[in-house]
Length: 176
Image 1 (cartoon, one colour):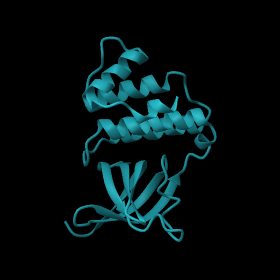
Image 2 (cartoon, helix red, strand yellow):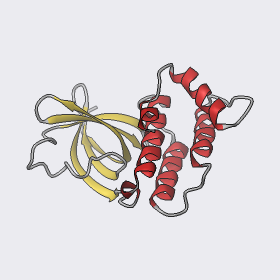
Image 3 (cartoon, one colour):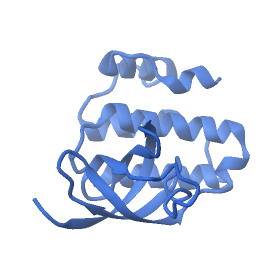
Image 4 (spheres, rainbow, N blue to C red):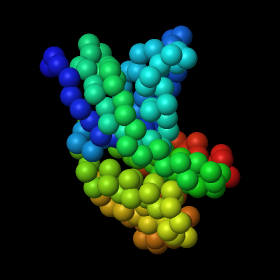
């Protein structure tokens, strides 16, 4: 499918590739999880560099590539700057991104998951983050993705249920 498209997305993950490139995993409003190639982003002169940081909500222009789609333009909508000033909020935000990344498949639209992620990042960025934010997020995410819920909805049983689904430990748990 030649051409290009626009996407509104949240940056979930970045992986260095080669000397100057990076693979960027984003969760978009209309296409779900996408793995995109950001060519030359690690060069000092890259204009996209600051836009494709973790947690950022961005507008992207993406060109269809042979194997991977390529980010041609990026513009930050919200960088959640207040969230970045508190290490505990960064840890929680990283957990939310990792859960979305590990529990969703590529190219499957989940508008409600995108809205949930935006809402929770906004709460973390502001002063309205609740004590149950993680458990509430996990409950809604599991429900909307069709994984079901454990019999008990406490934090430990939700975490155990998620670990049985993804079959790997979560990296964000190492940040405690």
